[in-house]
Picture 1 (cartoon, rainbow, N blue to C red):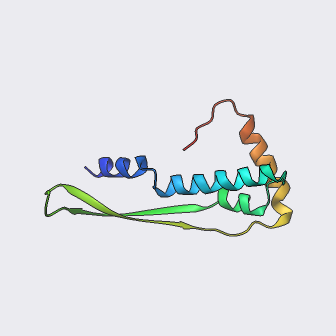
Picture 2: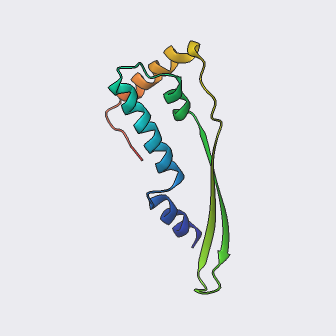
Length: 103
């Protein structure tokens, strides 16, 4: 079924959300190592939109439903320096919550 195909895609290590998360984490760790104050690049990586297009088809060999997946990350714009304080405040607020979900 379609939901099963989608679940399988998002459980794979190379799905678009995992790739984005890994890049965010690598960037964050690099800035922590340099004692940098979460610059605009990190804020940019945290404020993007992802579109995933599913082209479902019946595989002629297996006769099972399958899909081609096309994932795009958009709205990647460098955040202006004057919004830095706003982004740091949001991160601090999010970090103050006890329960967190990481993907």
